[in-house]
Amino acid sequence: MFNTIIKKNYDEVSSEAFKIMKDVVTSTPRPVLGLATGSSPVGMYKKMIADHNSNGTSYQNCVTFNLDEYVGLPKTHDQSYYTFMHENLFSGIDVPEENIHIPNGEAADEKAACDDYENELKKYTVDIQILGIGSDGHIAFNEPGTPFTSETHLMDLTEQTRRDNARFFDGDIDEVPTEAITQGLASIMRAKKIVLIATGANKAEAVYNMIHGPKITDCPASILQDHADVTVIMDEAAAAKL
Ligand code: GLP
Image (cartoon, rainbow, N blue to C red; front, side):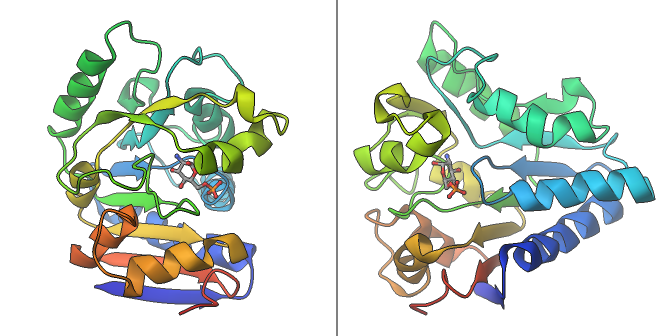
């Protein structure tokens, strides 16, 4: 079941997502936050930092799990998701470093890194999972064709995803890693509450397929049709085909 919210612009979309996030953080004794990278959640992260600074909302009791990480980029690379999260959120709030979980994209044994991440994640229940959506309907890095039963796994990135993300790598697709470690679709579905943020015309088709298309692995996000509590927050461009 989807609760859909359409807002005028990215700032309003971010405010709406922030409200839901703050509600979970302030009403749960030990909140478990599922976090995403990409440009979609950045506005919400800015509002979390501003609110932490001006109202003292604390993340000391929070545990965080990120969705995914590129394989082969050192943690310190400016486009690793480790760096992205520290720059865009963690450095601005008071979540303890030891409570932060991000898949290890530098592990020699990638399969073991996936299993370790999934086992750690299974010790918790994610209270709120933030998601973006890829223009091909992927969530986290679960590309089309990923089984709905998937848990944390290694994923070959599609050319479309690498092209979409090339903007973060000086526009050079050859610099975009070809693989990632990602939570699986079944991992994501265990979250109690999901908030998906989508803005811009290039998301309109994926958003339509997620909500109204058949539930098939061609559109990984269509699995969310089976989740009991999904809020999709969009701007008008992303909602244009609904
Ligand atoms: C990447 C991330 C996804 C994200 C998607 C959309 O592929 N792995 O988690 O949702 O891109 O990114 P953006 O929000 O920048 O459009």
